[in-house]
Image (cartoon, rainbow, N blue to C red):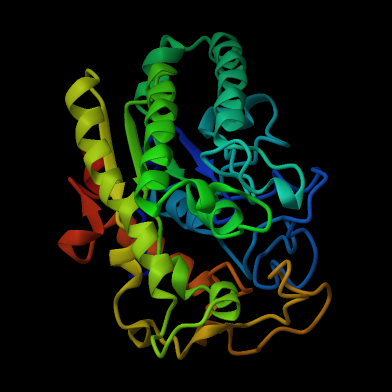
Length: 347
């Protein structure tokens, strides 16, 4: 499905707030002291503004969601959003950030979900002033309750924590089942904090097939399988609980409308349907297995629409487009629960 054909011509929600990791980051990490940066070529080779800090060749899932919702331009990153920019929303996402504060610390600074929620409090204060200045009859609470919130978190708690025993003790301390439980307990509190800040319509992305990332394929034996199965099995323990968490939040929080986006379902189809032929290798020249990111200024593959992965971790624009499209308008019943984003914003 092509986002351009779906747009109604008008913005379907007053604002869009995005919380997440490198799949959503559009520049928040640029000024941080971290190796988790994408503000250099060939990142952004297919993006109109070039290397903005997006960890892909073109647009992110967040960019496509904004487009599908009728926004004329991407939601600005918190790092640079100023003045009336914030009236249509803010992107807080940060590469290498996790649900747990310590996830990704071996790469340097990153804005964890707890810190992203604090940044959102700052935005709410600023938004109150903007609404007063614009002589709006809406209170900030009324305004926020009409917005859409999208949260895409947890991948780095595995990739840059649980699956790196040389840096983190978590896999030695906890079984995969117990670790998933710890993440869900923490995440539950964070989503409740978001609700208490005024969010009512919240789409929560589950984790995808992390065992199929080129980085993990390079690090672990697959024993004849296409992916590292134990990683996918571990991640599934988190996703299974996430669906139950959505039910729990909707049952216990007045007027809450949380939905679960099943990234595994979305990525499980036949990739050749959207023209993808290479699913186990990156399109760009990867600097080293240690970082898994594109080497600066190297020429990437020319047939980018045939690759699932841009670098060792991140999808290409064509995959981001398909993911956003199915999250917005579910193709399979398993793509979203209890409804997709399109139905969420209509409720």
